[in-house]
Amino acid sequence: MKLRRNILVALLCLAAAGLCGCRRNIVRAAPPSVATPPDTEPVPQPTVVSPQPAAAAPAEPPDIKPPAEPVPAVAEQPRPRPPVEAEAAAPKAEPEPEPVQIAPQLSAKDQAAAVRTTTDDIRVAERNLQVVYGRQLSASQNDLVGKIAGFLAQAHEAIRTGDWVRAQNLAQKAQVLSVELVKSL
Image (cartoon, rainbow, N blue to C red):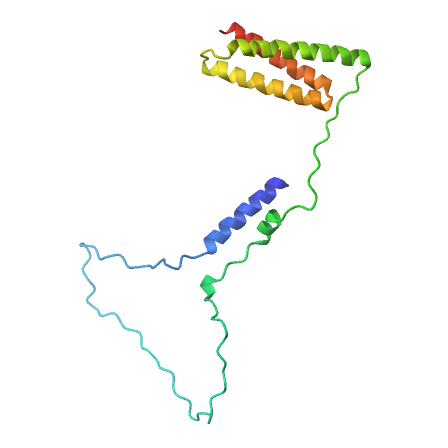
């Protein structure tokens, strides 16, 4: 649905841009080419018709008061925005709630094991990253360092939210990649 709205907004913008004309766009005839002879017939000129004065003029002209402020020309008035843009620019009344993380409930024994393995994997991954820091790395090794750091950050976030299963999976990924990184040195 959001994709449809984005496409609709894009189409409306393109239509508005297409309908807007350029006031300074003056069309001129192309200069005659050397191969074509000039026209020998004269071009007819349009005739100007002046308005005829009224037969009976009123005795007194009506009182017309000039406006207090000059009215701007039509071209200078700001164009109204399309309603779709107004809806997108309007602040939302309610902030969208954050997505709910569903974490499995672990028994005390399983949670203790998850905490232990998670902290061990994080410790190994961080130690391996410290070994790598300061060394000249290839592009693929730099990519691995970025992935490991990302997994570690996500694991720490999962620990803060109490999702130990997710934290354990992320820490294990970071640990495995860090071991591969150290082996590649």
